[in-house]
Picture 1 (cartoon, rainbow, N blue to C red):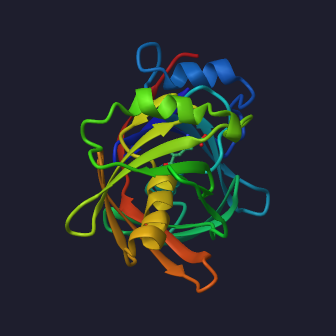
Picture 2: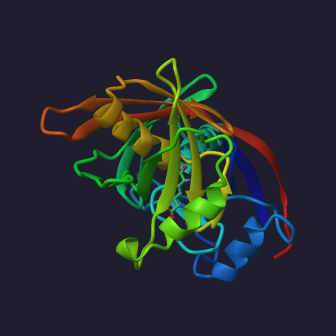
Picture 3: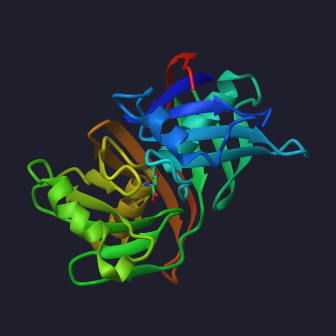
Length: 257
Ligand SMILES: N[C@H](CCC[C@H](N)C(=O)O)C(=O)O
């Protein structure tokens, strides 16, 4: 099986050109093995690039555990780069994903990916909860650098109030220059990843509401820098949300399945 490997701020994905629709998408064990860092290629997730009969590009995303996931922002940026590298698109594209249609632009090394509008942010005492294509807890911390993200994140990921689906968990530190530092525990990977696109999007929107940060919000992750641009409406909803940052091919190869 031929594959490509992409990464966007260190969130890495096995990318398969599945326009022939031959990939056995129901085989969770296969997807999990391809993503495994010791028995497979190694990735946080796997993405199929498909085309519908009417020519629409379609992104199908699986978490590293092999189950089909909800929307993946960094994966979406890598998907756009992949379609561009294959010569399927110019610098502007529309594609379908699990949460609906997305529009994106390729601008040099960056991909600007439009995310779905966000209507509801639930603020609780310790954290906020919202869905940016995937569900996210956003919790502010004074010192995110030395936080044990897995130890603190995992109980929230499995907390009864988010069952049965669970949630991703983001720890956010607000820096002196209006930038955020975000570390994320990702469900479906069940570990910290270097960056999570829907997670930093969630962090930026909460930081706008709670800290007054203006669009575009600059965010640092373990895997690099991202920006989130948005239009905040007076009624507390958000539109024209863009996740902006680099996405690149790392290597390609063949694996025996
Ligand atoms: N890394 C992804 C998020 C994947 C979401 C997934 N972990 C889930 O909620 O099942 C991102 O860049 O947005």
